[in-house]
Amino acid sequence: MYTLNLNQMTQQEFLDEYWQKKPVVIRGGFKNFVDPIAADEVAGLAMEEQIESRLVHKKDGQWQAAFGPFESYEHLGNENWSLVVQALDNFSEEAAEMIEAFRFIPHWRLDDLMASFATPGGSVGPHIDNYDVFICQGSGKRRWRVGSRGEHVQFAAHEALLHVEPFDAIIDEELEAGDIVYIPPGFPHEGITLETSMSFSIGFRANSAVSLLSAFADHLIDSEQGAQLLEDPNRQVVSNSGEVSNNDYASIKSQVQNLLDDETSFKKFTGQFLTAAKHELDILIPDEPFELSEVSNLLNSHAIKRLGGLRAFYFEDTVEQGLCYINGSELAFSAEIANGVKLLCDKVMLLPDDLSDWSHNAAFVELATELLNQGYWYLAEAE
Image (cartoon, rainbow, N blue to C red; front, top):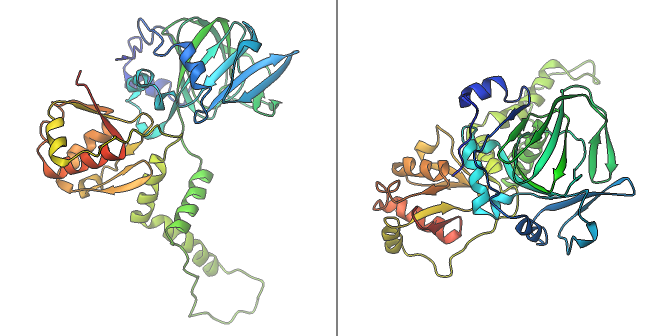
């Protein structure tokens, strides 16, 4: 279990002073930190087809970048290269536990957990991210420089690398195991490895209005909504045929606004959109389907754990009506088990004590059986 040490700040004080406002180094953010996954394991993951990875290095003074899967690394030597693996939380239970320390930020804002292995001199170069990130230093040491938010010129150092021109640092620190640097969106930064090291980045991203509207348009098409044509049976004669009157403009705008104002439709879209998997999931479908009676007994003796990377959310007003969202789909359930469903969405792992009120509830057991058989939750030993 990872406990975030904010150095005498409360979580709310951190949000008030730093979140989306300014970067900060949190010394000893994780006390006695040990890499949750070995460098060799990270390198092995980057050799797999379904895992998103990137290799960054310099050749003859020029930045180079390649996307995995990779076959080997021997040709790179012992310095000046960096390997990045995305969505580590999907594939490593031990690493995914780091995310639990950041549950004071709503989980729908989470992007993923990224791992970086780098040799001395290794870096991905100076750049700007459009998301909030907590970068935890693992084994080894890395120097981090962070500049101020402002007008910074970005350029393509390589077709796969967007860099930023040199900047003055407001943070210039060496990080050791357990130290964390928090960087909000828009602040240029660069990490340079001083000795062979690992680091782990927990990223939080909000979607742009453009991406939301684009996804909403796709949702409307898929659900065959929004096809109604503008109607104007009370049309009056006009003298200026080239004019779009204020009334006509208001009617055109209301076509779109009415779709956004349809609370049921837009909430369904939002729930499905926010729970859609960011990366491919490693689904754990059981060899033999679970039976209802079997699950009722198992909930008394085993923990159930959510699949790494699986997203499960609810809205505070409709969960009591029996609606939640899991992996891009709306799920209806009996309203009587709303509090049990909240537990499933709020916690990655539920122990028998957590489920004592639900293990003999027929509706909850039916839902748990369905989720176990889909491979979205799985049985784990109670700790």
